[in-house]
Image (cartoon, rainbow, N blue to C red):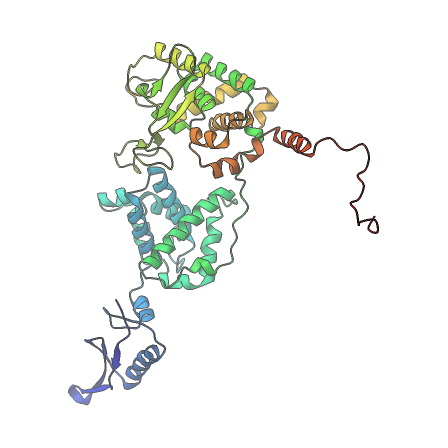
Length: 467
């Protein structure tokens, strides 16, 4: 509670045993009396003068401690380590497992730059591992003490990070930002990685402002620019329809149970996590014509130490959607045929459409479909294409699907709805993958201009001089 009603009294002199004296500063904040005792008059007068200066300058006093708010914040300052742990705990309940990992990784990197000494410090990799595996993982901390091999490292870092008050210094903040831009091996991180880590660091400091450990956000005063990131999809990764079908055929030969998995990405622009979550009862597959896929969630592959269940996978809502939201995506006849064939050959009836090879093992794992995709690229693409970024990741099939729809003339609003994007993001990300639109635009302009006249038009009356 901030209070401006402050009365500061004269210093009280106290006589102690053996003729020693002490000096007490007394003041009231609203109706609450406060006092602080000092061994010498000089110390008491110095403290009292600080109170008087704050009162004259109209600084609010903290109703709990009785001190001017800047002094109260400094008195109650916590370390960066304490703030980072508090921020992790605040975010944990509402964060997906993948986001929890990202927060822990980013805060661990920032902590390496926010140490007040390197005396007795563990090496960077050991320190980062202890922070990532235990300090910034609420589930692991709730179990109890850190593992024996990490306990000494955790104890050291708890004592040796800078107080939050030092983050008012732009140089300290800049040092942390510079550390976020470097990978473990010392190479420069990708622009998207830096942006993600910076956003998390910004959020942690914003939380410090929210808790009133800082008056203002220190990063707002630091001229530190993010490197430019390529938000648009690179057209070189997008396969055409013939190349996509060759890749799907190669998968069908070596891993037939995954043909439908990749077909959903190409023909329905689904994310891998959405395909892993897809259930039989969400598929509307008629014997002929178009069908529908009614998507209800996604399955993320994460480490068990980051999920609430302790399992290596976590079922979540659709990306950027409410938990109960669904998304309907049309299934072209070619995709319907692939999925109907998959159902006919499927060993496990009901539940998820795509299971791991071992019965009862749950959804397809990331390592399984990545291995299958690498084999398909070797079988379906030429050596030159394999060396290029063309379809280097399964996710590039989704990019190919969205690009195909846009180039086919499907309205952007409809494509965004099917793909689970906002229209703004869709047009920004896929702008470089839309072909032929410039030619169509030129034809429309020519049509609007009409046929050029055979004779130059005469100037209107009164414009002879100008002519």
